[in-house]
Every structure is written in structure tokens, then in C-alpha cells.
Length: 550
Image (cartoon, rainbow, N blue to C red; front, top):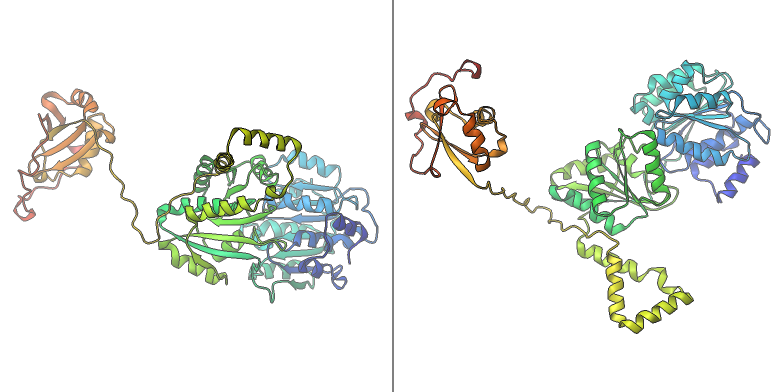
């Protein structure tokens, strides 16, 4: 049963039919009951619980009474999800005269307290900030008629169990409690048993394939081509909105910088950003100023971006739940989406396990090649609706001017160059299984050789000679080239620019350290003329004294 004020809001928003979860929770038989609801991400559950609690809040009236102590409390795991819930409920309850207040971490708590003092019908927030307002007496729980825990399993995973129990215990015993969770692990079941009254179990997962609107791809790459594969995927699909997941903040920063350098309109979401920065990033995605978002799992929990057609796992998630959570950002509300996993060849077994445990079948393939991307660009260009539009008078006059100056072939070629200049060039990728390219060592440059008066017979080793040279010779290790330990002495190559400073640092008689004399050679030593003695023929020496005793 949907009340008239909310029904009008749905119609104005273009809703013609309700999703399965929305139909289930608005069943008149469940009105007034506690609910434990399982529904996959993107199923419209925010509007669903907004519709479900409406009869409880309005209590037969067409509009809500003047705002005073809150009537409903909505708890979400992250700031982004809480603010998203605020936006959805604002339009849904606009005709009912609802006043909504958000209480989320990262925002000014003083502004939130002032908003609560002015009165609210619905409060939406994150667990930590809501508990803080309750403890300070700013959030009055005495008039609550309904509490909704959105993505309850995520909140428990993030360690909010004590905060949730505190809020539920502080609310009136006769309120309704609605828990929405993608899964119902034992901790959720225990929480429901403790704080809900004869809750009705509602699920829309049975009989439906998990993420049926998402096409999964596993793209095998050699490890050094993983970032290039991300670039080629973004170029090939040219999605209106895409999100790229990484496992660490450092990787998010690296990918964001690389994509920005390649001309992509990109923003990032990671834990160190302020709330204002996160809000600006998401708004840039929503209004089209950015088309790619690079994010960590935690930063992207619960966000809902419009027209998100592509999810790229630049790094494999740690578990199957993470895979489903990431992928659930696309394929929402009936739209189709693609979830692409970048799989280094050494991680193929891990990817197979993730897909198996998530009960997902993926197409195993390779990333798009430059030829694939060029063909896709040509297809997009030829099918562009601009070709069927009638030119305006100004456009027709300018076209005639161009034709008078240049041939059609020259004009078409110039247009192609302009069209291609909008895009980043695709990456050349190695075939899976090919060896990594060898890294060539840069030439050391002009150098001079020195001989040190210690060698194998003195148990000399390059690993302790290198720091000794840096410290005693007042040099950086980049100024030291080859170190060749021989039987009775060691030859060291130094950059020519470092030689004057090294000579100045030597003591009387060329002493580098106690018992070690350095002398400059006129030319490079003949390392082949003094073969190294076999280990068994070398005289036994006493163990080398510790550094501080020599």
C-alpha cells in the first residue's frame, strides 16, 4: 500500500512499476511489522524502505506534523551512502512535508546539532556520528517510530556492532525495526533476534541469478601490462561513467595520476580525502565533468553513480564478497553493465577461486588491442546520430566555404585527425605468457678506479664495503659503480664527479678506515689476470671484528 503523497512523488520521478523488493516491503500484510530484508545491490531498496515506513510515520495523515523530535532514524555504513539515502528520501517525502537531517562523520557536528534543534522528521546518518549526538543529548530518540539499518552486514564488517546495539537499545521498545542486508550471516541473525519483534523475513534473491544484468570478464595480462590494460578497457568501452577499483590508497593515487596524464577526466575516492573532497568527486561524476572514478573498496561502499556502465578491478579483490560489492555498482535498476577483472597470469588461480565462490561465470579473454580500439572508434564515429541531422544555415554556409577551399578527402581526413585527438592513444600490450622486458642498466658514465687494501683473504664483501665507502668517503651510493673483490684487494669504480670529494675525505696515506688504504689507479684493472683462489685453499682467518671495534 502506497500513500498518495508518495505515489505522486513516484509518478513525478517516472516510476511506472515497482521493483521486486519495493513490492515485497509494501505488502499491506507487513504494515507495522519488523522486517529482515535480503536484496541485492541496485534493487531499489532505498525507495523500498522509504515506502515501507511511510504508513508508520504518517499514521493515517496526508502530511507529516510540524518537525520536532525525529520519527525515523536511518543508519548507513558510510558517508556517501547516507547522503545518497538523504537525496532519495528528500524527493520521495517532499509532498508529505518531511524535514530531513543528515548526521555523518566528516561534516560539522555543530551545524548538525543546530539542525536537530530546529526539528526533523527523518534523521539519516552513520553509526559513529549518530552515537555521538545521542551521547551529547542532541539526538532525541524518545519519539522514534521506526529505525532502518541499511546494509547491516557492511556495518558489522566495518566494526559498528556496539554502536548499532547502543542505538537500538536507546530507541523506544515499540518502534519498528527494519534491517536491510545483502546476506544474513549469523551476526545479523543474532542482532535481529535480540532487537526485532517477530520480524518477517523478506528476500528477493531466491530464484534469481546473482547480478544477472552484469557481464563478467576476466582479462589475462602479463604483470607489467596491468595498468595499460585498464587504459585500453576504458578506451574501448568509452563508458559514460566507469569506476576503477584498487586495493590501496597508493595505487589509487598512482592510477589517478596516470589516467589524468593520458587525458581521461578522472577523480579519485580514498580514505584520506575530506568529506568535501569526496562530495566534489562524486558530484563531478554525476554532472559529467568526470567520467572515471578510481577508488578503494571502503571509499566506494554504497555509492550509486548514474549510468555507471563499467567496473574495472585493476587489482583483484581479497574475497568473493568484495567482488560482488564492487561489481554491484553497475547493472542497477535494470541497466546492463560490465565487470572486468584484470588478472595477471600468476593470479589466475586466485581469480578462478573468487569467481567460483561468488557463483559467477566469467568470460576469459585478453584486453582490447590497439586494432580493437581503432575499430570500435570507427564504429562509434560511423553510427553517431550527428550524420542524420540536418545542417543549420550557418553550418551549411561554413561547409560550402570549406568545400571551396579544400577537397572532400582533405576535409574528411582533417575531421578524423580532430576526432582522434580527443582520445588517448591505446597501449601496446604483450601477449600473456611472454617474458617481461629486460631492464637495461644505464651507462655509469665517466669513472675512475680505486684499489682497497682488503680482499677475499680478509673476508671482504661488497655488502659491507658499499656503506663503508658512502660513509667514510662522504658519497651517495649512486656515485659507486662496480665493486670487484679479489684475493688480496678490492677494486672499486667511482663516478668521476665524486672523486675529488672522495680524495679529500681520505686520511693520511690514503686511509679510508682503520686498516683499509685506498689508492687511485691510472686505468681500469685487469680483472681477469688474478683468478680467485678456491675456498679450500684460502688460509683460515679469525672472524672479522665488529664495526665499532675496528
